[in-house]
Image (cartoon, rainbow, N blue to C red; front, side):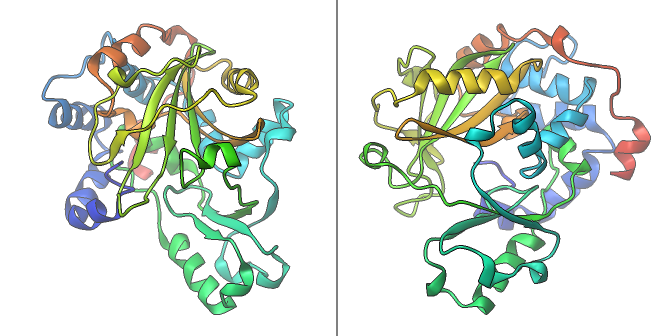
Length: 324
C-alpha cells in the first residue's frame, strides 16, 4: 500500500510524513532522488530514464501536469470522459458538495458511495441507508472531508492544484462470475503505454480477512497471467487466475481512447457482466515508487514509453512549488 493511504503506516510515520510533505514541493528533484534511493537502494536516472518508475518521475518534474490535475479529480474527470464520448461508462452521479453540511441525506438513494474528489482510500459504502442515522452519516462524511492528500512524493504534486470536495455516486457490486473470485469489487487497472493498453493489473479481495492490502495478478493484453511480474508481500499477495471477463476487448478500447496523447497512464475500470464502468485515471501510481513489480517488468514497461509525447510547454515553477 502507499505509505500515505495505509492507516497503520500513516499513524506510525506521521512526524516523518509532515517533514517530507514540507520538503517535497520545495526540493522536488532532490526529494525524488532521496526517496528513490531510500526505497530501491540505487540512484535514479532522471537524465536518461529507463524504467516505468523513472519515466513517471521524469514526467512529474519535467512535463506539463495541469491536465493530470484535472483528470485526477474524481468529479472533474467525468467531464473528460464525456468529451471522449464515453458517457455510457460513467457511474451514476448523485451530487457533489464542498461541505458535509450541504448534503441532503434524505434525497440520496438507498445505496451509494461517498468519496473525496481528491483523496484515496476514503470511501464510504452505504448499502442500505435505512440502517444508518443521519447523524452517523454526517460523522462519517466529515471524516473523509478532513482527510487531505499527503504530498510526500514528487509524483503527488499535481494533486496540490485540486480542491477537495465530496462526491456521491452509484454503488457498484460484483456480478455472479466475479464473486467467485473476489469478495470485493474487482478493479481492472490497465497500463496504457504510448496510447496502447499493454498490461492489466487485476486487484481483488481488498481489505478482507483482516488484510491491509489486496490480492493481485498482472495479465498481458492477450489475458495471459504473469505472476513473475510481481513482488509478493503482505500488501500485495498473489490472486487466483480468473477467466477473461466478458467485454474485455471493449475495456481495452475504452482505456486507449481515454489515454490517447499521454506517454503513460493507469486507467482503472470495472466490469460487471460485460458492462464497463469508469474508475479513475492515475498518472503516478504509488508516486513513481512502485516496488510491487519486478525490475524486469518495470524496464519492460519503460521501454514502451516514448517521453517525446509529453508536453513540456509549462512545467512547475519554483514559485508555484513553494506556494503549493
